[in-house]
Length: 431
Image (cartoon, rainbow, N blue to C red; front, side, top):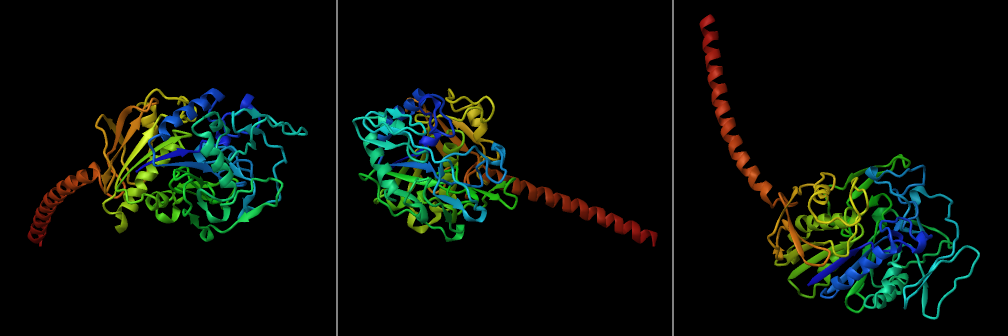
């Protein structure tokens, strides 16, 4: 079974015509770049059993968003510009009487992908084809420029609004997307459950919403791996969730395993926006979760898994870290260095080195992943010096060190014993 996980290719992360309102977090700088991503995705979906489109879907005052309760943008602290907000839900613990200005949505022709900018006080000028509103949290309107993808994406948008063909929290399955309606408060986190029972559209396509838990964040499509201390909501303090467990899953691993239809080999390819944040964490956290949780479950014994990181269909956030381009030329250098930062690697996962040995699906612990180039060809393989769950080279190093340490301690004890004996003799002689 081959699963493609397309990360956050939605309106709030994509460029919009002439830079007008509609996108709030412009990771992709020009509309042509956005179209290039869609063209690359056309190739990637061809041989896939399932395609999962993840979407950021934050409560309007999520703890990671600037502008509320005095928070200011600080990427290192995990506070980002306002983006991808579900304007029908807010976090009850920090509820406030506020609504965004009621502005008309832009509209897109689903046959041609042509966008119409709708200004305040003017009516929507819809063309001869079917048009739908462009809403930030939904899949990008640029998909409607693709003959292959515009059909399934249009149906997914319609079905998602009804709460169908999606993986997400049960209380937000139905998407009103109406800023003028009464805003509801999200339930307590412990009361929210994940729905991963929906079937894919046409047996292939499904979406997943993430970032919905008020004081937790999911850069990864697989799980919530960051928690915020919001006791001072103006200055939240983020930390990694340790250990990661199934309770913090977005439901993606559960859905994949539930829909494998007896397949014992699973290849998971991740791509999308952005390569140095959410795509990266989806790769690393997805592997860590398999190693630490799902590979150990009795019902999953005998299943082999392989992960692939695809530059094809992926673009990066510029200058994260400083100097990072939107389209890096390769995976080594600054990209590999960024992946290997300790705050990016899950606990227990060692640093990554590169070689040219291709990867096959593997049962048990995963210690490597393949990287595809922008044309879809094999580029390189990343290997971990250690993996969550105890596998990898670091474990054997520890055993050797442990043996050496025992010899050193034994020798040290003999020396100390001799010193104590001599000391006792000198003491006895003095008496």
